[in-house]
Length: 166
Length: 101
Image 1 (cartoon, rainbow over the protein chains, first blue to last red):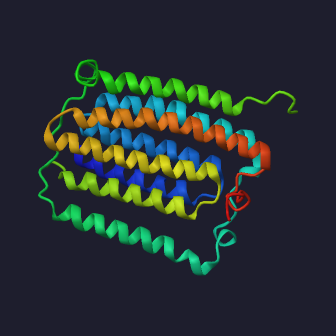
Image 2 (image 1 turned 60 degrees about the vertical axis):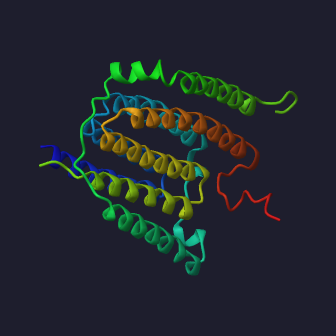
Image 3 (image 1 turned 30 degrees about the horizontal axis):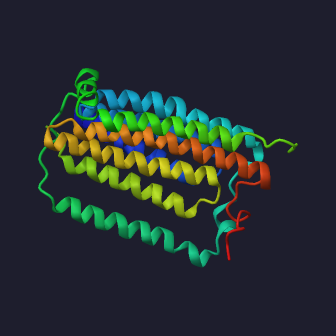
């Protein structure tokens, strides 16, 4: 059961990730990223990270990507990406896949050289994560809340229209 | 039958590579940000797989922090994208080249 789930959802994640980078319409790319998030959340649950899986669904698929959708809708048809051949000279287009393939081959080589024990499931329930979060990780936790506050200020300051500007 | 941990790492590596590839071939600022999100999530999968490797929960917390910081990054990035669109009427990085010497 777990094996079937793992291979089908990692396949789905990779397929939708390819859609994210290849589809010309930003809205479709974004919606396939939502699907990628869903399949990644399934993988997280298989690894026992229940809390992170749900946070991923709520924070990413729910909030962040909807924010993206708002901005894309705001820009309407002007946001459409030009076709690949218009963006680059075909000569330069060779380098991106080659660099990506070299990186992937290197990573696969290193990973396959590792001793690979089967994945042990750790139960990352809300209780376990919360206990650790409010004891050992209390300082980083508070710092991230401060970071979020600062980024809210920054976003408001950036998006606000200056006085006198139409 | 259990899944060897290296398969998770390889899936994460493939997703990261796809994100990097997207970063290189995309010319729309929003889609470049989306590719960065993809890379961050691949790194998250790596953290959680590492957490399962050691049987400890710390990796999951790191993934959680990465998620929060990514949310902050997206807020700023989208605000800048909106500003650019307002000023230059375009989100294409071929049009936004004032910093090019």
